Amino acid sequence: MPKNLIFIFATLFLSLSSQAHANSSDAEAAALAWLEAIDSGQYEQAWETSSSLLKKPLSPHMLERTIGAARRDFGAVQSRRQVSVVRETSMPGAPRDDYAVLTFQTSFENRPQITETITPHLEEGTWKVSGYYLN
Image (cartoon, rainbow, N blue to C red; front, top):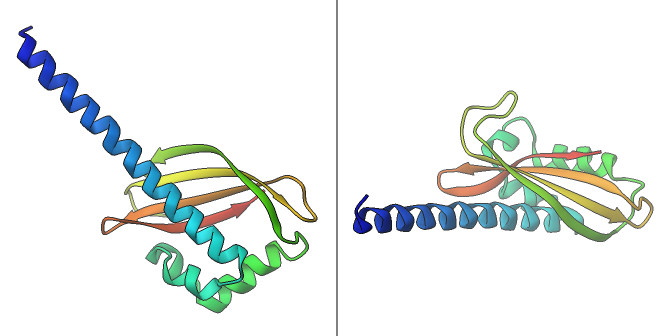
């Protein structure tokens, strides 16, 4: 294989690799901003920045009631550590598209170890949260 062709493949691979990392970083930034809004009780702000996949079934008030009820006895967030990021092209009950599934180990004031899973969805070029789960 000619050296020029090898260089083009290597450059293309590095470009795609750094683009995938940037996309994961953007998804993580969107997830963390959304979680920060939720943590500080700014449910309307979290709803406004959410994906249409989350907004359609939930009003801002319903989002507050649902997450508030799930986290009612937890207390304030003490720490949050990202455990994994998995890229997906499909999610149950959602259209095929670009998703990131981020998992965090979170310590709350009254619950020392909770797993939070948050799913940003690439919607019109912007990562927006489409799902949030506690375990």
